[in-house]
Length: 226
Image (cartoon, rainbow, N blue to C red; front, side, top):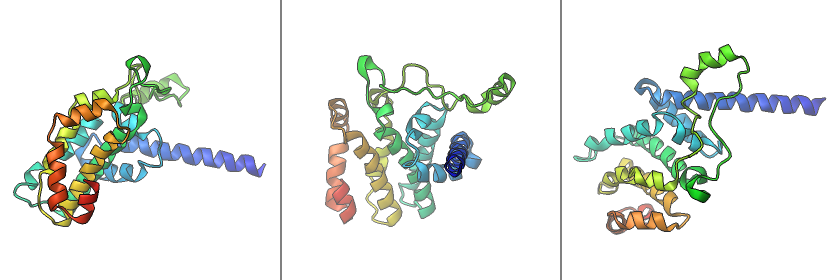
């Protein structure tokens, strides 16, 4: 009896946590609630196995993350980036790294499709009226359809290029070092599987000279990561 009760409590707790994840993903679409959502989701990125596909498939989420990145551009030249700005955009970069490193959003399955069993649809509510009422606020999070994005799609969107302005920076202050390190983390997540399409894509960009410059002029940690 005690074991059954413990299992029920654990299931309930897990469901509460997932409800929070759903709420935070929804909140990314609003500038007023985005900062806290970025912080909370970045904390959960390693403890929620399917967070990456949820982020990738949810409507407007990747656009919101890219908006956070672009908003920082005016602060990198001249170098006026504050610690608060750096922490916020690095939370967005951490979520992009989560997406880039996940096999369901970065690896092609056989026949060009992702080898993923999940489709992100909300199925908990059994009552039809309740499902219809909740469709507007929730369905955009987990309706990926049969053909899911692949690593090639991630690269075709040229998402890594949005990070290159950060790698061009030379300021040695902590906000900029943190920014460069987190940006390198996203690139590193792409190249870890050592797949030829990723290597070919990066070789057509300026990533090699950028990494060489970071190794020459960055901090010891930046040189190691670069």
